[in-house]
Length: 381
Ligand SMILES: *Cc1c(COP(=O)(O)O)cnc(C)c1O
Image 1 (cartoon, rainbow, N blue to C red):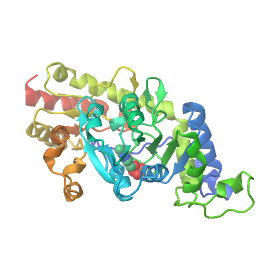
Image 2 (image 1 turned 180 degrees about the horizontal axis):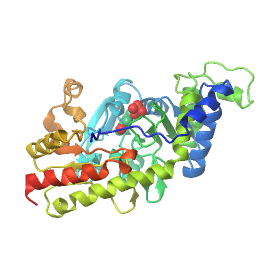
Image 3 (image 1 turned 120 degrees about the vertical axis):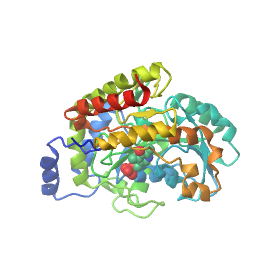
Image 4 (image 1 turned 45 degrees about the vertical axis):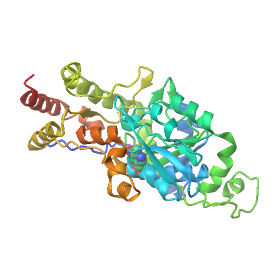
């Protein structure tokens, strides 16, 4: 049996809605299915200033433009993230200031943010790694004290909650992804959430190539023109139709994925109790969307043994991110591996386990059984 690291889940409704979208004759952005998706999201999560965009990457970029990031500004960001988080900074001529992570979540360690603030600091960009919300209350408190903007990379945390509040609602701006590797997929797709009411109108301009077309659509003007900078930050209605199908099954998908989290927690429990292997320790006020699962081994060698033995069984795990500060482009920016020491160390020893919705239906027992046997081989218990 072959267990890939990731696999796209189909609900069965995708084709029906794509067909409906095609027949509508209006398949560009902000049409029928985009509206349906946005109103569903607003109802469920209260996302009332929301924009469907072509990707999580585009959501981050649009967010940075909305925050008015300028060349020379500094942005505090964890180094343990996907390249897109930091590309949104460097593409606009700003500079990423890498902050270390909290080993309990692999999210930004908020206690290490304040020492990194300089007169040039403009933003903080935390991420919700593995769908576990970052310490957003503490981060917002720091941002208020220093007048900084918080753009939360929620690419992995659609459907997670922090103190009963949906992920992304507490930051100024949040970016979500509906890439095929995420819980809910449009193939490629993303979502920008804006929580600053005065920025809403400008966000509609940025999404529509810097024009005030939104005012024409809602009847406030009869001709639109170029009013600001912007780009094409629109998700096609065809892809919104796919997303609509997926989000219609949101709770069912979440429930299946919860089984994976539970199985992995049970698998690693003896090793966690014994202080051998580390897994996430989310705060009790966090509710997971069950995006992913990771484990940190005591040494790089033990991690590699675990990975190689699994590969023999055709179970594919993933090494996780190469920390950005010590990746080739991070080094080019002037960083050294030892600049972000905890991230550098944990990044070597972490492994991401197979995690996809249909694994709950097929392959989970096989995966757990083999992992258990291999852990026994390595540790003798
Ligand atoms: C997936 C991901 C992105 C990028 O999303 P795309 O939709 O693939 O552009 C950005 N940041 C993080 C943390 C991600 O996991």
